[in-house]
Image (cartoon, rainbow, N blue to C red):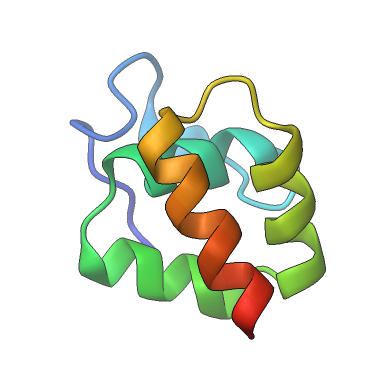
Length: 75
């Protein structure tokens, strides 16, 4: 996936390793990503990791955290 500069405004998106920086990538995409980026996220990372990061995140907007907690609980 080619990350948008506007999504990762604080770093060079070409240098992000999504495996090493999973928490950073997941939080940023869940908070600010578009549909295509969220679909990629859901296919790239396993559900257990996504759940863990969403539940422990102190960065996600409260509305986003509630939404993803509910979505990940159902599947």
